[in-house]
Length: 113
Image (cartoon, rainbow, N blue to C red; front, side):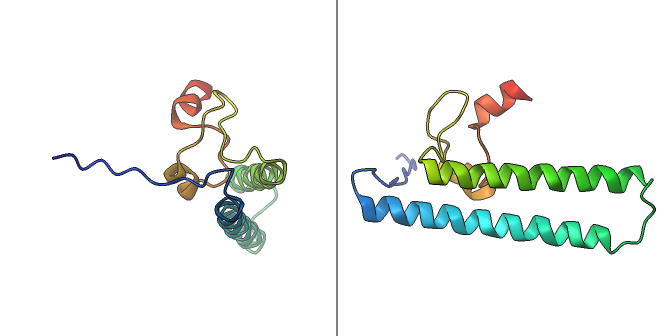
């Protein structure tokens, strides 16, 4: 007995399903943006020296994530969201749930790392 379960992905020819998918993507991206902004505020409130290298590295990582989130919003707007920039195949929905601003499927991410 197979336990394989396939998820129904929105079909582009069904606008109401496609719009629901994009609405959910925007919601996840907004949540990710809010979380990163809160983390940046928390870093600012720590009162550490500007010469603190760990703090600088954390700030840089948050700023990179915010840039990636903004880029993901642009992909939502131009219709390329959820398509791997490496292989042009759909990024699995599960991966987008975990990392909504990703540009790559797992295989392509491994190749770029």
